[in-house]
View 1 (cartoon, rainbow, N blue to C red):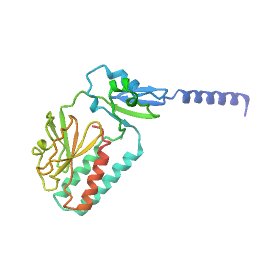
View 2 (view 1 turned 30 degrees about the horizontal axis):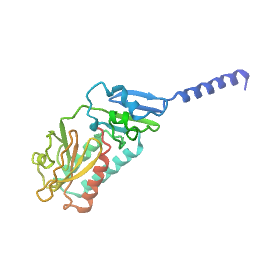
View 3 (view 1 turned 135 degrees about the horizontal axis):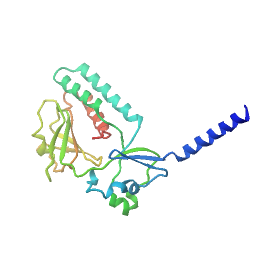
Length: 245
């Protein structure tokens, strides 16, 4: 190797090292706007650029870790399980499962980070101001939602206006009826990521208000194929937690 070649290689090595040193430690896309941090930021620092620009509804704020491979593996596992059920059932359950299969393929997914997000809390209470780990994130901040969304053992996702102080059971009568949905309970997926099982019949009714922006999962009635649909309900809930909507 000539001295000239050695000198050029040395420059390339130093240059590549400098690029690596300046590579952002944390990337956060907030409402589709990109921010980079060369040191691990705390939550308040991440929220600050947009926190005071509007009247945000912090309970509906959602944080996701991008590029997590296990989420796509989980999606494929659920799709494969639904495909198996389609091959072993008859109409009209087959058609309902086929539509669900199509819907899940189109979901935008990322790993949900279970975190209470509130700018005022993050600024004043250290426990609510954690430091971000290295990686890429997606953060969604929104104004107060106006709808509640219902999905699962119904033909299509239905959005209904949010009703203040109304229990989950008050929405159910407006959903299309079919023999395959569980009529005793629903699962409320609150915008903050909490999942609550709620009874909706007279004998088990619970007065739990649905937060605006919630996704409400209508489970499949398990008396049709007890073990298979019980497992399907479990997989759907586990996957939907990571859905970006």
